[in-house]
Figure 1 (cartoon, helix red, strand yellow):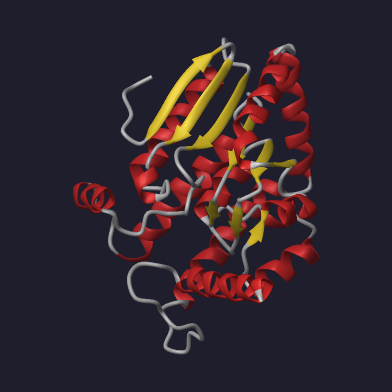
Figure 2 (tube, rainbow, N blue to C red; figure 1 turned 90 degrees about the vertical axis):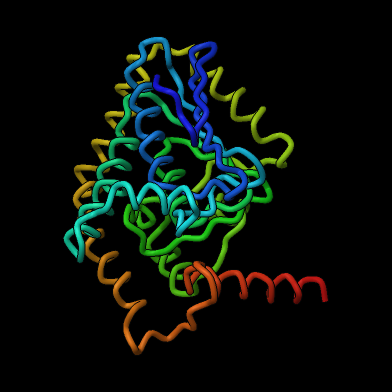
Length: 277
């Protein structure tokens, strides 16, 4: 494995632990972080000593989503400019968020995500590529019509529409009720529970686990999963453009926060104030 700036990678007892390691930015997904994550997941999948992959996030949050302009990201984009216009944007989003995420979903090794704190947009996308998701009781998920749009496969379509139409955060308990996560645990117990499960899975024959994963993924693919992910990228492109239309209904917040995220945060604060009162 090459040296990494934005992730941690370690293997012990047949378990590869991959940690998003930008806690000062709530593990915002700089382009380099995604490239390093791709390298790590593929390396773990190719390592015959690794039987389980565990994805975690350093600090208080799993990931607050895509990096919208930290100094690291600005420096990377300046050194690696994309083609101007829609062609460059299409290529970048397809390469980082469709191709990469499908590779992660199809890595032959069972993969478990441990989610705490924010799991917003890009964070949701990474977590949803895992086979198993454990969440802390302080987890806050926020979904959208994003590039790797697996939500209709993770959540019943009517429940998905209800959530996305309103554009609100869901907590760990709600995520479990919706079928997005497998278990919800106190924050202090999350990592221990994930590692206990991972150690149990690692005792099984790796080839059998690979075939089980392949069989289940193929059932989804026969139902259209991969084609739907690829097709939804075009819907994402249109959705992204509507935020720049003169008639866009939401106020654009100061700074780099997406309008939908700001609305969801405002709604969450109002809901919490009502609960306290």
